[in-house]
Every structure is written in structure tokens, then in C-alpha cells.
Length: 73
Image (cartoon, rainbow, N blue to C red):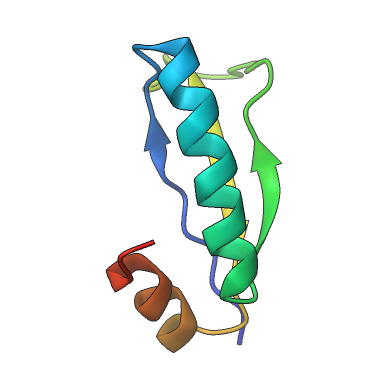
């Protein structure tokens, strides 16, 4: 069953974030994952946004997501 990690992202250094973003994407793909949502404008219908960017990643299963999260990549 697919799982969907939703990291909380706050960008403090745009240049460093671009490096991180490309490395993160490569590591996610290496573990069979894919981005479903990757930043963009946020339109909140109720309440306040907690973070300025939202990322949603899909992995084929929880075990794979955990291996990715614990990996050195």
C-alpha cells in the first residue's frame, strides 16, 4: 500500500535549497518514490498555513519510505 510522507519545508537559503532539492529528488527516485506536490503557491481555505511550502512524496510502501528516510542520501 502506498504511503505519503509530507515533509515540513522552510527555506532559509535559496541557493542551498536548490542543491538540497536536486539531491533529495535523486534519493527519492532511487528508492522508487515520486513527488506528488513540490512547493508552489498555497491557498489556505481555513486557518493559517504552518509552512510556506508543502511537499508530498509517494513511496510504494512504508518499509521503502523508512529505508529512504534512514538512508545516508
